[in-house]
Structure formats: C-alpha cells, structure tokens
Length: 191
Image (cartoon, rainbow, N blue to C red; front, side, top):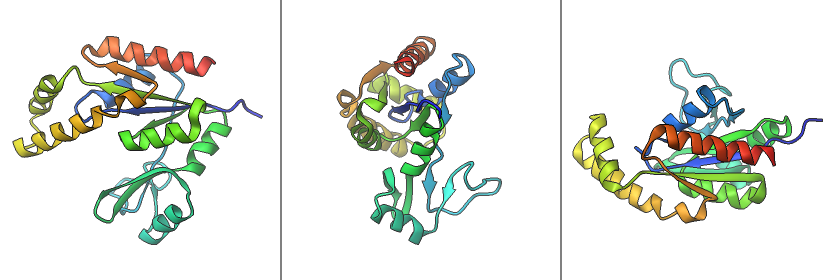
C-alpha cells in the first residue's frame, strides 16, 4: 500500500501570478504534484473530456452531491453554475500516494485546510500590493476598466484571508516566489 500523498492548497487573487507559479513548480522545480480534477455542472466545451478536464455533472447530480456532503469545497461561481472538488477525487489520489494540488479560491482553501488540518498545506500567493496588481491587470489588456476595478475590489477582499493560510508568499519576483513555494511544498511532502 502506498504512503498517502499530501494535499497542497494554493490560492491567490487574480493577477497575482498563481498560475505561472504553479506551472513553475512542475516545469522548473520538478515538484511531484497531481492536479485535482474539479467538478462542474456546466456542459463540456469542444475538446474537453470528462474526468480529464472536469468531472461533468448534471445540475441534479451536482446538487445531490452537495446534499450528500461529497465535496471538500464548492462554489456557485455564477447563478446556477457550480464548481467544486469532490472528496472522492482528493482521497483516491492521496490514497494512491499522489501529492494533490488544489488551485482554488480563498474560501474553498480555508474549508479544505479545516477539513484536512495537518494533512494539508495551504499557501496564499500575495501580490506585492494593489497598485502593482492594477498594473498587472491593466498590462494584460484583456479586461475593460470596470472589470479591472471589480477584480481589484475582489482581490482586496481575498487578501483578508491570507492570515488563515499556513504560508504567505509575496510574488514581487517570479523566480524567488516560485522557488519559495517549491521549498515550502517539498519540505511539507518530506514530513
């Protein structure tokens, strides 16, 4: 029987560099991680495969799973549109000895940490500040100004959750931040 894997939670406000840091963990630092496959009640898009990109559930199946307490975390992201992480997904992968990475929102991250306690490491990626976050979001040139203002407002709210995480890593330099996150995870896995 494999030694159970660890659960790694990474959360951050939009524009903090979380996705880039996560890519660096596996590509550059070679941290042994398996991504958790989230569940959703939205229909698959062209090219998406059930169980690979998402676990695609009907509205009824998703709501039944909520009622049966089958999620470690879930969120109604838009009215009637749910995303979440199934307990069975996390526990199956962990039982197989895989270190499971959850890239989730701050509230979900706090719920998962409470559920797994010392079996999970929670890391919050912090932007260097709201002004820098604004510069990054505007530099993307993908959102209109009102959407950027909404993201900044949400980021300020999300940053209030940082003290509830095991570690906070400020991403003011990508190489330094990704190395720090890799070190935190590697040390946690080695315990």
